[in-house]
Image (cartoon, rainbow, N blue to C red; front, side):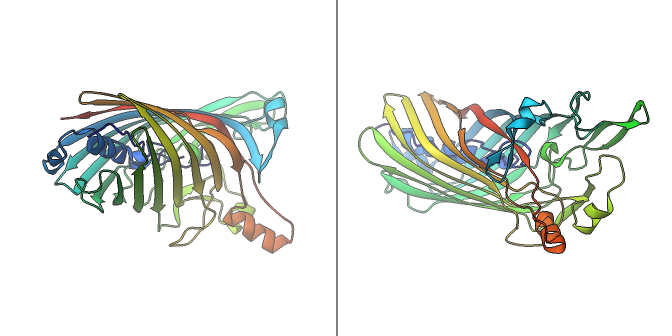
Length: 375
């Protein structure tokens, strides 16, 4: 079989799959690093019958981004960077995924995300006044583990020129959703400290059980060109996890009234589509990527603090195959970012008849780098 690398979802994360930044789209179960490897396994085996043999596939991938540009709706608040009052999130994620091919059509995947996050701000500490000192909070550890089952809807020996891969998974609340660090605050002329939960955007986990549904497709056009598409949705039925958003302080009456005094457990979804060009063992890809935390979930209530948001990105990528190894690099570049109204924003707007909408910080780009190994 000729070589056609079809590049599926590689971490967007999380999860996490994450619009990047204050919008807490976190890495959840590798965001389909397994499918990426599975597609390559099918496309690269010269003997298709080998697909019926059980095989292990290991994927290790890392993702990094820095968010700092604030948006309210689709309007960028450029003064935040100019005045250096912007919130800066630094996200580093390592995903370790293991896939077991059960037979020609079925596979089972397991993913372990490891995270290290930093959040630098003024407003969470001594206030956003220009000239105030900047402080950072940190979180690290295991994220939310995911297990999933995948099925080729067409037998690979028949669907070598085009196929659909469906998946359903379970996201477990293994990540710490109560991670705490030290916050600074002013009392008179003194700066004191207190311990409290870090911001939702850097919590390693969300505290809820979830179900993932996904569909991945590819189509070979000719000897060099192929297309791909991915749909991923994480259903989080739990409304909120009860963790305070007051950073060790006391929640305001307004926050309690509009439910933003505790952290929500939001849904998240991702869409991708693009084209691959292959020559020898190299594949270059170009596509579009849309990541979203919706303001309302499809199951369960919408209470709690969340920063809904979405990012439309142009996603270039590169892939190289060498024997049993598969190396890949993706760098989605944001072309549109939006922070819509959250559920608490809507409650407040309806209650006061004054439009309310918070902001969120987004990244300009993210970098995902990884490799797969078949054994």
